[in-house]
Length: 164
Image (cartoon, rainbow, N blue to C red; front, side):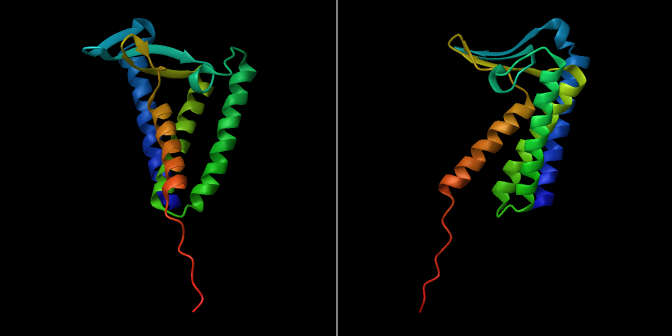
């Protein structure tokens, strides 16, 4: 299962870094700031440049270099724990979910090391309400965690062997 999880982590990491490169270097989103993409009634999906200096939803944000280093170190420590878990994964869903979380976490750590903040740009909104701006790494982390929770809640319990 480790190989499967590592393949997913690598795919997520590459997709995350390529899209961030595209947003910054090709679309110049840091300069443009906002590109409307889809407006369908009350729903919309745009590209909006945000430099996230915190963690999920901007929590623990700080401009100090030590803050970014600490958040990056924490993400790497968690990734190491998840890699160990991935090596012992009991099923494909767990290995895939852990791979998604690790790939996303490493993608965001790379941003912190390169830019001092995470590059976020996907902006979904409806009825005037905007979700938090996110990137592929963030989406992979959320999907991976939700998969782990669903697996823990709904996985059939191992059959109990009855003495005959």
